[in-house]
Length: 516
Image (cartoon, rainbow, N blue to C red; front, top):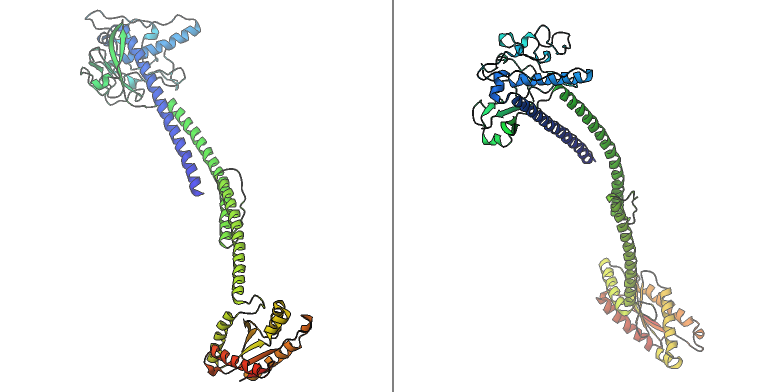
């Protein structure tokens, strides 16, 4: 959840930062293009007006020409609105070899002359504080005022004079070539640092304006010539322009950037709040579903395989919940089938075990099981010095019954005898069919006299059973031998002793119990 929120906020911050950086770069590019076009326009007019750079500098420096042109354009625009005659930009050219007149004494319309410090000059707009447009602090050597940059049509300062910047040795002509209006050393340019510097070279790529990078007269390097733009005068290349510098925004541009920054900040803040709200809602939904999944997994671990997780929507989490529900149903169904199969196997195993230890006819234990259990009972009796008696009985004249009444009657007799024996035994006693018509009984915790009395009771029960209901005229008796001395050594030995007593009972007339 926290990672999701942090990722959303980081994405919002990154998008906002990239938008702001991209906006600054775009403003920088537009500003550079505008400044380059502005400089190219005025430099072309400058060279076209005077013919060449050397002739132009002999009359007035380029920055003064640019300011005068800007002012004349502004006055022309105002004159066209008022219906007055437009101002002229023509200035007298000096004769060959003659220096031109001082800039403030050249003939021309009043709007071309530079104002004096005391009156602001014709055509100059008043300052905002009500004082003159130009101040004495901008006077150049010889008392000639240095004008401040005019304001643009939007009320802000116009682009700084093209090609001019502090410390730019190539932005003014040398002394004697109209450079007397250079500001005193150490002073800043009246309009502040210009956003861009422009390098001007002649048709032979000799530097005319160095923009503080190159000295006038030195060759322009090949790297700078690639971006140079040719200035054409009368179809011939009069100069080359190459831009330098970085973006220095004006006051209006700073205000614009500040407004954009505030707008971006508001947008980023809103996006961050929205990201937080959506993140919280989404995380709650995810947490609810994941919590349900966790509880369901724990319940499955506890043994409850059939679990249902609520599904919301159709996203990846919903797909996970659907897959979990399907898996839970399949596991529960498989577990039920496996449990049923296991129960079936257990029942079959019990059945097989019973079949392996039971006699199929009488449902009594068989001889193999009796031998195993009798040996265990003997060992326990010897270990704990407890009495144990073993009995073996045989149905009298059973072969005659089969021959006289059929084998089916004989089977019925065997089943009924087994029922009588089983019905009068304790849970701890062990009775089994030993083979044919023989039956054996193990009586733990029973001494010989009690065992003999029980066998005599069983003999009477067998003799007194209504056998005529099974077959008319049928009579059944049983002879038994009982032995209860552990000194015989083994259960098998005791059983052999009991068998010997059985034969004695048969020899004595049958339907008897002999014991020793």
